[in-house]
Image 1: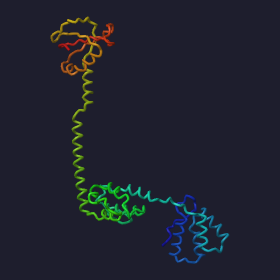
Image 2: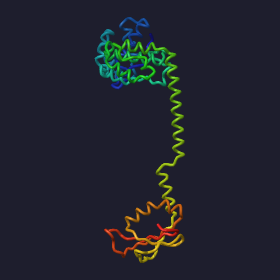
Image 3: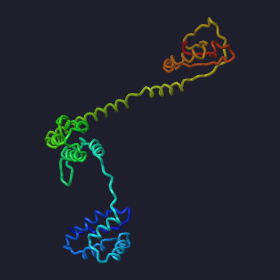
Image 4: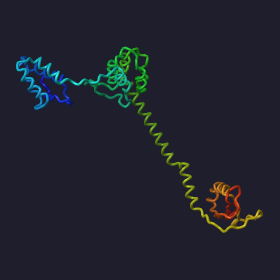
Length: 303
């Protein structure tokens, strides 16, 4: 196996770790048939980046150890440039990853690669799940099986129970599902989804065609703004003041609270009958129960 061409620098943030570099270098030596220490040591120096910490160390080492063995060089290099220890994932970490694994219904009936091999999506999912269960050390038990099953598409869930006694049997049940059944289930799901979308679209059209209560209030407010309201000079009122026939004018006095209630209840009549409302603020009149007095006149009949 030939060396991949990547040289090592020995820098603290180098992407190439010393242990991995030495593995590749040894493979290269075996592939080229280099077996003597002198040849290996000389070749080692040719795989270090120029003026890098690793090359400077090598030159210094060779000055003090000109007749050393490759094994000694190998050991000294690891001591000087130790590999960074990766964070080791725990069983809990792998279980969390397993619980986050999803098989989307949109992917069913499609192919994807796992481990360099092309599989159907449900088969790839089963393989991923089993691999994580093994890494977590729970593959021989039932831990997390029901959690993962609950997140499966209904098409798969209907055929795979949660009563499996190990991850091997659980993932086998998923892996061995009939592809025709899966494709039929996806087709039915898509048809139901399309019908739901059409139904929602019809409801939205109906909602747009039907004015909302807020729109009705806005329209009413706009119409009320066109109603003519004028002020008139205060006129005396009597208890026996007559109401006139249509076309005449009648006046009635209310407190502000009563006036607001009256005008709200009469909005519709005023708009449809085009009445003219005349409001007089009797600011000099005594108040009743703390309310100011208004005189309201209406034409075209009484209020």
